Length: 353
Image (tube, rainbow, N blue to C red; front, side, top):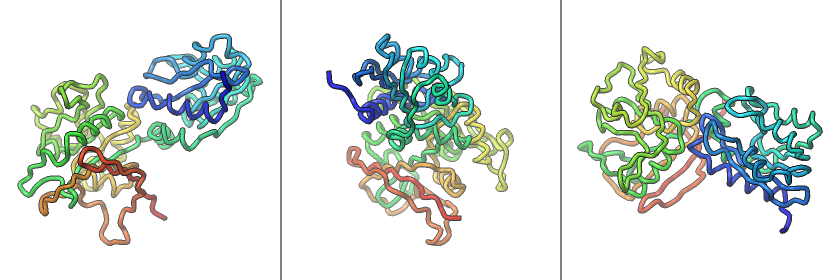
C-alpha cells in the first residue's frame, strides 16, 4: 500500500469532519486520519455527535498498536480537558503517536492546550496545514467560540425582481420544491431557526426541518426562536405545536434596544449561552433588515426564482441604508442552480471604520 502525504491526509480529515455537520453542536466538527510510521493510513474518524467519541479516539481505536510512532492529522487542535469524554491529547500520547499535525488551533479556553500537552510529552506538533480549508468547514463553531455569539445565516426566497410575496400577500410558493428541499437540508445544519412575530402572524410557519416528500420530521430539530417584543405569538401558532423546542423571545425577557424591540445582540448572546453555535434567520424582511443594520449577519443564502411580480412585499426592508455609499457590499462565494431557481451565497463585506 502506498504511503499518503500529510497534505492528502489533512484533505481527507476535512472531508471526514464535514460528516458531523448538524449533529455535533455545541461541539465542533472534527476529522482525524492516522498514519503509521511508514505513512500508510491505519485509522480514520470524525466526531459524529455531541457526547460521542471524538475523531481522534475513533481513529486510534481503528489503528490499535499501529498508531505507535505514527502521525495523527487532525482538523482541530486535540482537546485537553475532561468533559463527557477524556482529553484527546492524553490519548494520543498514550498511544505513542510521534507527530500530530493540526489544521486550526482550538479557540475554546476550556478545551485548548492540547498542542502544549503533546509537545511537553515529546510529540512533534505542526500547525496550519490546510488551515483555511479546515476553518471554512468549521466556520460557524469557530466564529461563535471566538466572539461569544452564534454564526448567523440569513436565508430568503424571492422572485427575480426581489419580491417575497405578491401584492395580495400570497407567497406560497415563490420558489420550487427543489429549493424548499434545499432549505430544509440547510435547517438541519443549524442549531436554531429565527423568525419575527410578523412572519408567524402572517404565514404561521412550522420552522421545522422536514422531508418534504413524505412530511416526516428530521431526527434532530433546531430550536425555533420567535422574536416577539410584546408577546403577540398566538397560543395556537404552529411554532408551539411541540414538534420542536420553541423560545418566544420577548423584550421583557431578553432586554430591549433603544427602539423598545428585542435587543438582537442580547438575543444572540443568550442563544450562545444555550449552546447555539449557528442560527438560520428566516423571516421576515424587517427583522432581516435589523440584523443587517446591526452588522450581525455572517452569511446570506438567497433563493431566487425566475419569476416576476412587479409589486408586493420585498425580501428586505430598512437595513440602515439611506444612500448608495452606505450599501451593504457582498462577496459572492457561490451561485448554484437548484431546480429552476438560483441559490446565491454571499458574505457581507466588513465596512471600514
